[in-house]
Length: 402
Image (cartoon, rainbow, N blue to C red):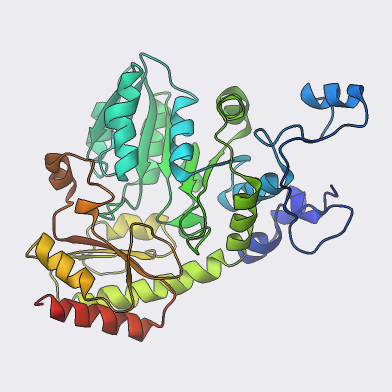
């Protein structure tokens, strides 16, 4: 592999974000290909036994096995690390593999995790079900309440975990304040940054130690394949993350990494265009509904914090239909352009009913506590014409009796 300027941080760190999205991390083979090469190989060959030994003990550069490192995956990891301002990226098979690995790689029985209660359903399951099975204590709190973070920390707290904006209610957590609480108590802060993307928010700029993504969402952006990413510093990777990553086999496939690299090239353009549609749609829906959430709206509850740590409000909207599930289903079934699905961040707009899908595994009391009611719609704005999108949503609301 030829290590061109795309892998030289002294050069790529000076580039504008859009240039980084297209070129950072690129390595070319001896064929001098323009597009990133796809290395569909499980293992690698060596000229001599001595070379194999040197690669395995770290004395020589090179690849050994794709469960550990792979050229295509490495290009994706380097590009994501540069975008996030991290030392290291580790690409995983799914977003939930990233969330799980970021926790389990550093925790042991007797440790404590303090988490915001407003999380993606599977992340909440990690807190409520998986970690306690292994003797890891967990506490979930109102993430918007800084006093709850301060009083919730214990002597054995190792990790603070949150998502902001939260899925699906768009709650905003003060990243800098929570990072300070974590560090004052010798803990690390993990942030699920899926909704914001690195285009609109970089949690490490506010003190986060580890940032995770489901790259299935905006980073792919076309609904093609699954993936995840963990971004952190070199010390954490060497001591905790890479040994866990290497030995448990949560690595991303080279093909999926190649898809993600192609997605990154247009990520900034797509996120801003989708954000334009989200702002337009949120303002239009406000004329119909009393509970509409998007950080661009003047009455958004957490607007001051959102404006402080996000470049823009994002591609996601949440709104409540007053008559519950039946009205929500009537609205969704009346959509003519927008798809009904449980994904988000795609080029196509998507309406989701969290009560019956993404957060269904949570107990009813937990859903209601989070503000996930039977009438809540999570709406992912895509790249359709903004006027077409508004017209489709408004006619569906009319069909639902609003």
